[in-house]
Image (cartoon, rainbow, N blue to C red; front, side, top):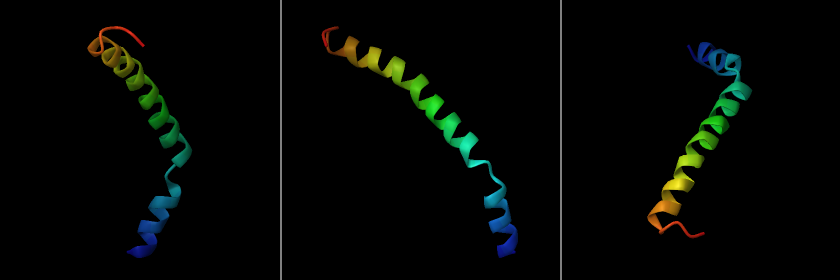
Length: 44
């Protein structure tokens, strides 16, 4: 049971997961910055 769990965790490709996570953060950061600028009246 425990060996199967550790085997599942080691077989996960963490590099791909982190790359997708960073891409998602970058994609979400663009609209977030625009939203913050718009809410502050458009001035940096």
